[in-house]
Image (tube, rainbow, N blue to C red; front, side):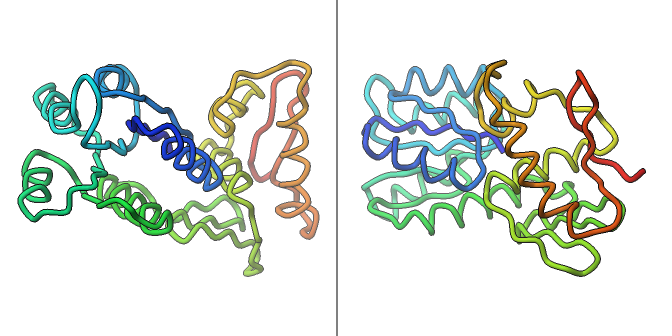
Length: 223
């Protein structure tokens, strides 16, 4: 999932970015309303975390411009103003949720997941390939009824492979989707992650599902 944070407080933005990345999200950050609106209109984000009090263009106007442009990307507003009128204004203006500062990161994370779940009612919450099952909502993986404990990054990698089961994914695509970075030919981050994932998903079982396609990348499929 790809998120956009529009937040002018540097420390808050860095804190949110780090926490969300640790939970498997790709994250872009904009520090003012004009930049945030541009990124929201030009990018393909699954959700926008939008501060209300922003320089150059406040969050109300960013939201208004988004909806006027018929962009339906879910928006979660962040603000220090907790008045009922402000909450109503945000929700009636097209926001999908509203969170008052200061807030616990765990609550923000829960609200983001709820909004994403509401925004994608047609998405399949459980993905299955052979005897491997991934529950996207609970973020749990099982194979042959044995639970597989995954880190946030391993979950994101496995979800990517399972969504594209039978399709060879290049190291470049994997690094962009899972680590939100350009692939460095000298880096072995993808290989290391695949090796660790294989230890959990393949090693304890008879039939491997994650395969290397020499010179091309990796594919998850039953053979």
